[in-house]
Length: 483
Image (cartoon, rainbow, N blue to C red; front, side, top):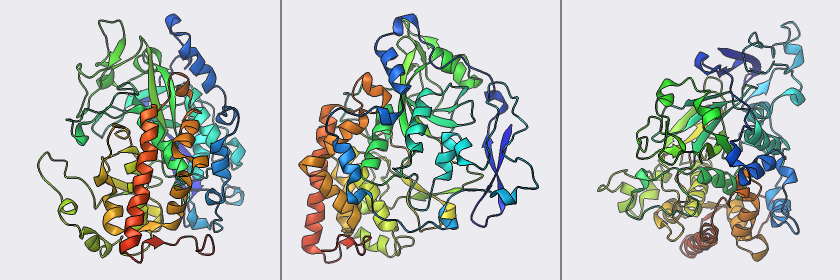
């Protein structure tokens, strides 16, 4: 089944917004807030918190987070966006005058789905569609857009209509569909918050963590990047919201009840999809992360780029960047890193990855429409926040070898190192807004302390670069914050 909605892209010619909804995903599930009798208490509290929009979940007293986002560095002027600076655009009313209401769908009566009543008026659009229409050349979302709170609220509370395993990747993840045609990517809880990755485990064999996906979204926003799709935590019932509504036979065959009476499943994937590595409810309820899906590739194609600092993914081999201290000189002469902002974009991503200790950044993506003049998507962060007791200096190699960084990034990092805006403090406050924070903090205190420790190391690397190089700062703030 396809839902077709007329939008316009760069050349303002009409194309169709197609959300692929396979026939086997059309069964209707039970209400999302169905709870087992024994699962009241903390789970009920999370459900109630999720029913309140994020803006109502403020930390009492002085808010360092609000003060941070009011700072001029987080409110820098943007050029007025032109038509080709938006990823997607709705067709103007005059363009559809003779075509009738193109927002209507012939599938309005499809079982379980809401009747479509969208118009060209943005107020009629569901939060996921507003998010798609808000993607620009510079960022995935505008932090000040009120739709951001509505979107995370929507992810945390919408009734789940369909759950199927998503193909691709190495570990288990599910594609969840909602009655208003929105979709989200689910990653389940695999281990407790305070569990550290075994020091003998290679980075490419590590678990993916639901709280890492949520925390990565918050950290990316605090750094001012806005390049990770909005992600929220949620408690779901694996029986009523996955097992009983899935039409994915491969997934349904992997459900079982554990000796402890918990409902479990393991799916089919390359790593950790076996009875020895099940995903289990307690006995039905399971913590998950839900990340907003990006626009369908048929409408907004993306290009995948191999990272120049990609790891070998071998137990014995070393890559060129690990052996050659002058490796960046070659990268700088290679398109697209030889001009524009691509190199400092990559270094932004390296700083983010170092702060959250993510060694699994082998590729990155961009939207094809914007060519090379656009931001990098910071996707797939499940292997972050695995170890808090040690840091991995090799993640910072792009910064160390290239000695180049955006002025705006440096100034925000310096701001987050000050006592009034300490990174661990604003991160703690930001994560407290997530519904799962009522069960337990999304990040343990050692992980939050590690953020401050790693931030100091980033600033030290930059200072060392400035001692030996003349052209370290890429000035993206012409006319602002001049020395």
